[in-house]
Length: 185
Image (cartoon, rainbow, N blue to C red; front, side, top):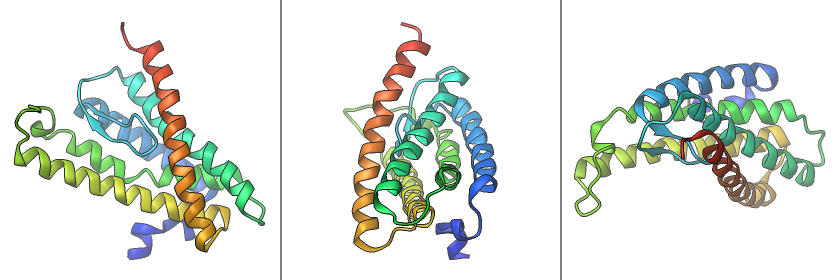
């Protein structure tokens, strides 16, 4: 059971992982639209004002695509094995599964009623739970990277850390463009 929760990529990859991952990302997108949850970066989850469904979909696409681009480049640089981009794309899509639960948490009113002068215990508890889903996703992304790119040890750890930072930067650059073009001024 533990392998399915943290490293399902030893069982599923490629087109099968991509299809399932994209389906689950679409479900996450719809839930996020209704719960006003935003995935505005490679590993980010925020709760706030509602955006059009198209913007929610572009947030999902941006978060996924930025990780695929950066981790593919890292795989080609770090691995001596043949890298298949479809494996990276599929496993990175599937690694986003915990974000469904983060989107569901977005329905909790305490996450939308924030007073910066007084942060409620309810807000903190739900925020920490959302953080746990982000951590789970990052663990899945690490395992997706090591399996799809066949990297191990220090090379995998350092490559992953550098890649996740670069993917986050890329996703932030890309999301600014999405917001600029698709949100009312």
